Length: 393
Image (cartoon, rainbow, N blue to C red):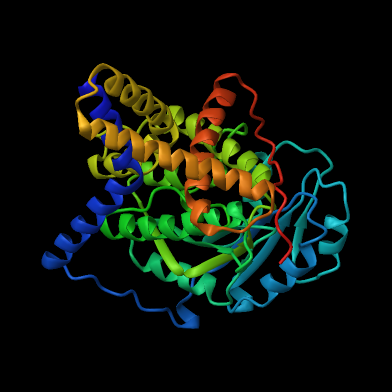
């Protein structure tokens, strides 16, 4: 019982903090033998042709602003295709897009999910590089140039940009927690790439060599992750570029963030069963180490082990009341979960005390992981993309 308690505690610590610490040590050791080199920007006449693909579903509130953001991107017009696909949209989104002659539009009334829409759009891609972004996120003008410079390295098959969350001083728990999470996640992605390869990509902004695109199953729940990882399974690297970023507002509230996280984890569990090469250490041991450490443990293992660690800690304290160390650890766990509960309570009362936001968001994430796993195995998660309500900027 004691051995399994320490095993559970170690895996939880490793998945959320230990892997980051280990990565930081490994990349600093790597720099001793192979100093990090900056990748130079390409001049305009050497830039590859690029397509910006946006799958939009009922985004009439954001679409005009998104169009202006796309048109403001700094990239040679003769090498830049902007393509929207709005399958299933029943509001004014397709009509608004169709007014712009510099933008190509694909639309059909049938809604079959985001992956099906992307698959339908791919034959219309003209660029050597395809950049994916969401309809409710906004890119910095230099984003595309910053992404494509990594393709000077022949081994790079995909490049992920950075996701940034707009968090103001009056942010609630979901917004502040989401903002902190993505800052930490961005650091991990940067270190992953410096060690070998980033793991997956966020749909807010990522790109691929168009020729390497492999159609994924139409019932795929998290298409961005699967598209990028299928390229990694071919032996290519997923680069990460923080100077190319997509900005979006946080989820409107914790309920919306929970809905989004549950869907992501359900898709993550689905992807674990489908990415067999990534999970096979005999295929690429470094990629497998990164994939399991960064994704698989968080999605499939640590949420359950958190519960196990707490229950075993209670049993150990009950059975061995003289072991002070286990009493201290149990007290720390109780204080942490109490802080999380206070974070939830204060959010309901719309009180802003940031001290409790991070433990609350952490527990929210892990509850979503359990709920997402259950939803996937029950077959209750649709591949049709579900819009999460976002805060108004």
